[in-house]
Amino acid sequence: MLEKNPNVHQLIKNADLDLSLSEACLRITNDVEIEENKLRLPTHDVFYLSATPPKGNYIKGHIVLLHDQTNTSYVWKDTNTLQTLAAFGYSCFALDLPGGGRTGGLAVEEANRPKFLCTFIELLGLQEVVIIGSSMAGSYIVPLLSERPDAFYITCVIAVAISNTDKLPAGMAKDIVTPVLVLRGSFDTSLGQNSANNLKNLANSRVITVPDARHLCYLNNSKYFHTVSLNFLDIVLNHITKSPFVSDV
Image (cartoon, rainbow, N blue to C red; front, side, top):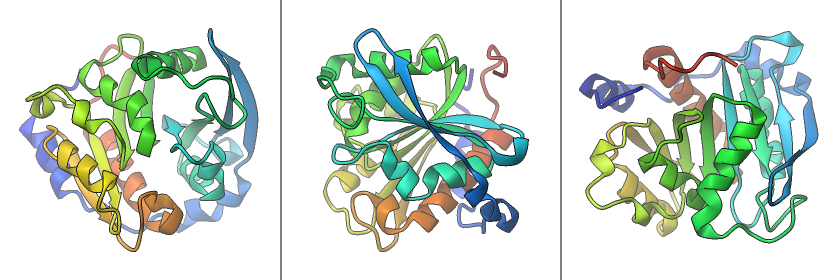
């Protein structure tokens, strides 16, 4: 289990997240195949998109992506995010959250959203996972920062102007050790700014302002979003100790 460590904090703080991405990996994004799937949960039949590294390449991590309130899982395909992450070695799962898209049904009550996400991840059979979430997806993610799941390990979180950060337990921010990349568009002076202010004091967070971008920064500047996200993932997976009690899937 990753515990508070000043060396981890400094590593994340000082990492160069603007490094150019591998051209070899970028060239194979068009080879990534995206599949449509359904997963039956107790309350919903969840529709999700999945993508894996092409050409049988090694899977170095699993990523679950949660969209904002106005979009669906296809926003991650339309911005070439699924294709890019898969080309760089990640197995990706982007779900349509209940209440919209092809999952449909009633929206999950806010208090039950973390449990819903945990159930989805557990039924996928994942034991270590990266979570990328945008805007209202914070209602699914934020509680899991302070109350870590027992059935799987959250390697890190990439939080794009997420909601509900004001509901973190008072005074607990410095004790939350999950690495978190906090992203906000340069033109987002509302939720994105509030989210950054609330998450900047986490033990292992890094706040990045995405230039020339609005609230959903990956829509306006997907190239920069992919660059800083993939460099952050490399830092976490290659240099920060993960859970000792989780075996590879």
